[in-house]
Length: 111
Length: 115
Image: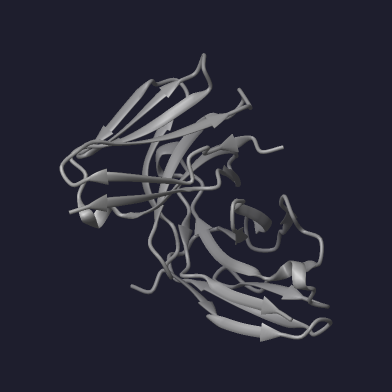
């Protein structure tokens, strides 16, 4: 049973608009949540994280929101750019050495 | 700045053959990891090494062995490859610290096909 779920395998948005990627989790013991971005034929790269004691973290065009009561987090990208087209993985930290990843959402930003 | 380097990038194996995936990092990180990525499954942890001299099983260790050769290098061995091990394998490293900096740096991946 997947502890971290990304229910939307793909998302397409127009350049300049907002992209919202969603992630749900089941384990209330996760203490940190992270988003990774992956281009084809490359390894995932860290994008942004949020502590479980916070509800929002912002870094430039990227904002992550955490709703602990709903066990839901989302990544907002504003404005979206064609270079943002990639697969985005949500991950939750179970321990210092273990991240649990979601299955990924493929984002396409149309020019 | 190479970061995490893994070899080979592509490999085709026959069922029952053995092979070793090599990984090296130049960031002086203590912890290293092997993940596999399968369609619709995200990345799953196979084995990790919290520090030099230690290794531990992750979510999907069956059919694999690992060796933490030194602080830089962490290898993954398939003793008798099976078609179910067809996957993309990612090596990664991290430096445990405060959670904000506890991010994992990934290599570019190794595409393995077992026929």
